[in-house]
Image (tube, rainbow, N blue to C red):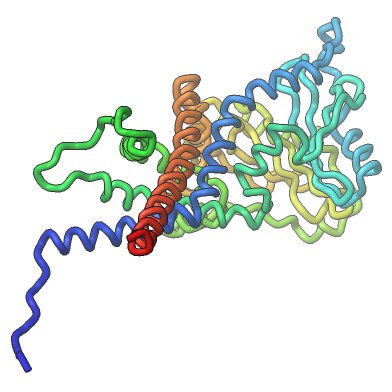
Length: 396
């Protein structure tokens, strides 16, 4: 028996084997999670285009007429009155979040989360009359957002989104390795249109991945960061900080039967940050009104987040401020959201960035679709070649 060692594979053979391993990994990642990435990309692109249109339609449907007299224009129905009325209609265990109108001709929007209804009710702030209501997933844009942000799985879909985003990074890495030319070969930027549909689609798939891959990765990473809240806490912990949490209500207030009006609480919060505009007043359900603090969220001039992340928590019984946090004093994980939210939606850069975000979404949709189509064409060609080889002896 020969004792000679088997010859080592050549460098080219090792590179070819390594390339096949990358190709196998790339295909399996794409076939397993590609449909999710395509859904995220398509819904994201549609949201960028349709959300402003939907907002204009909604504004036209819920527009109100402010009183002609300047003194009457400031007289609105108290939030506490609306809170009690909606709690009677939808149940005392319904959580209400009030979004005050940003101009005199806009409606008051109230987000409701209860057993009988989850959605938004629009009211005339001067009369309290209901103008319209929309369920949480009602309407085209709301359904798109539900699919895009939770994969129609609600809270369970958010960690799934974060996981799928990480698989995109692996797809990007493996695709870059496969696209990178071998030694002595030029970069492949050209799309061959005259060599058949399959070759043209392969070149297009490679070029889109090479040109748009990093930009798509930014969109995927920012979306995953916002979707799954534990990532905020992880970043804060790495920085040595502690996540900001809502304070506890003092025991005496929790047992009290007195409840401070929401309007007084909102006024106190705005007095704490005089340069801020109130974006949201989050009230606990009446069934546990004094057990949890009322949160007022404001937008201050230097906050990059369009809705503001400055918060004031107040004692629902006494109206005392329990905690106040300006957006730039939040923990690192929360401060990052102030920047990546407008970056992810495109609001940070105006129409130009919004257009780029929409193109990113279309590219993210096109990459998995074209990749699966190319895989299917290759399998079909291999099957046809195999059938031809098997038929050849019988023909002879």
